[in-house]
Length: 252
Ligand SMILES: NC(=O)c1ccc[n+]([C@@H]2O[C@H](COP(=O)([O-])OP(=O)(O)OC[C@H]3O[C@@H](n4cnc5c(N)ncnc54)[C@H](O)[C@@H]3O)[C@@H](O)[C@H]2O)c1
Image (cartoon, rainbow, N blue to C red; front, top):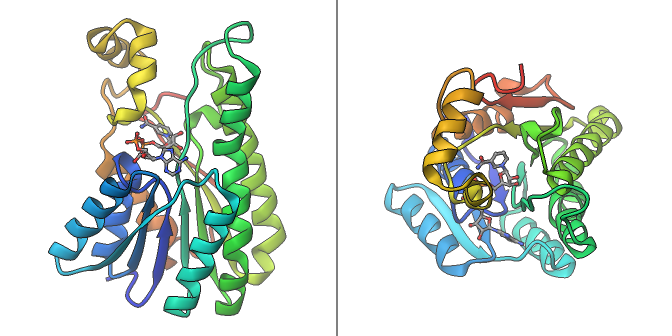
């Protein structure tokens, strides 16, 4: 097991990539604090981990609440005496181009896709410093390194969080606290419902995927979870400031 005795804190862990990552971290031996704004979803994921004989605890957390986010991370450190891995994952996708997106939607995108990662990483820093090491994984997207059509709020904020990840990586590399950006392409989760509607339904989305993705398919959450474990573990010990793209070749 690659993560024995480590403690991981995951946001947006009640569904999709966050849930699969939380499970994979736990199956590699980490104790995982499974957080989500949806209490039942966080509980179900933690329960599934415990049922497999691994360690997890659920916590309700909306990452837009700075105080709650800071205290959840601080509580976890206090309770477990360490924090090795932060996977700051929750995000939002608002479709549309410049003339379609309301200022409030741009602000909402910024709050979740940039600001919440800033607050989470800042809160995790003292614990990782005390440990002499840490791995912070921030979910960006392949939209952080390419430009989509009619996705101004998403693309802008995902580019911004990659910039912030690299800046933090440069600043904290001397302390062995690593920051990497997870950059998935199309992964089949409820997250794509908005884009599915924008495309004109599931059928249209599947046609689009078959044509636009060189590998001709969606990725699975398990394929992303493998990369989460890699970034969390010592197997990536010399990797920081990296944008790990897993997208079936979409942005080639
Ligand atoms: N699925 C994809 O195709 C894809 C591709 C690239 C990047 N991403 C990124 O992955 C993240 C989510 O994707 P997913 O596929 O896991 O989605 P998902 O919809 O399956 O799960 C998202 C989870 O986040 C939770 N959540 C939403 N807002 C929250 C908040 N304010 N505070 C706490 N939890 C909140 C939801 O309750 C849900 O459990 C986003 O950052 C997204 O940009 C997804």
